[in-house]
Length: 402
Figure 1 (cartoon, rainbow, N blue to C red):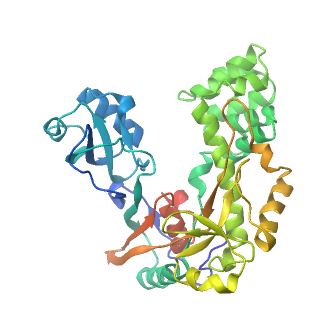
Figure 2: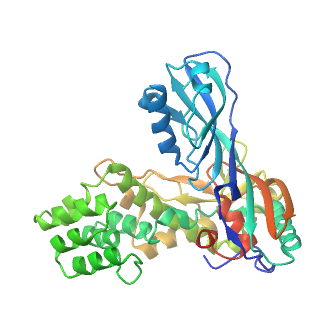
Figure 3: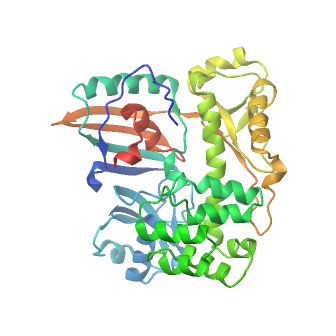
């Protein structure tokens, strides 16, 4: 993604996440607990933990049922993150007395239902960028002003594509039923692997020596090790691949959906705020979409950020745009050699698809300098990523500078 919506404004460079305190994120709740019911909502601040690790530690420490626990969204590990989780069978005083490294329970209130994924309005961010350009504050304010008017490109970004940047290629191969190619990408290309043991294992795999590849793999690569062990026993590439955890296979497929969506965002970057004939416009107030038959008539609503053009997360049920906008969406499928039914996969892996806005509103903007570091504050709706804002401001890949 070399293109930027604010390409006429120079970036500030800089580095991200030198310490967890440089990246703070706080959930904006969709609703407040009603103070009655069997589910205890815990407002928690965590540092240096994934959300799933947090839930595991809470379950062990509180004696809670892990399956009954809920959360609204996943939060970064290398960050100070404030989020809500729900538990059952626990009293507020138990939770508030909890003493765990990297975990603070800030409040505990009852509610009637379990907290579900997506039950949040958005997230607030406070981010510190270090080693920025001397005039970073003015540059950042100019860029943020543009983004506040036009919206932020709703890229998924590099975090979806894994350590080798190829999760989407695994997903693409699964959709195309090229199972050996999928495993090739999982084991990795030796030319882009930096770990020497992993690199040697990938070279042995390329030579067809699955046993040696298994022996050379570094620790912590359990899924890859199981794949190689099965291949060494003569199990087919297809059977070995589908022996991987279901969640991991879904992650690969989701990465491919994300990649195709990001392609359309890039293709429409120069007119991201403009409705085209045949667009399926996304309503930011409720997430519903409707067909745009008269773009000029609907454009004032887009100018007010009430609605935005959308693009598909491709799947076998997703509705595609029509006319000019539809041509772009169908031509990308054609280029990939796919149709919507290509996503009708077996083994519970089928992707129904959905619509997602090409841009998202940016709110609660504030900027300041702290020594040689720029501090940014802003909010985004759920399902969008702070890296989409940071890449416009920095004009570099934020994750490669963290």
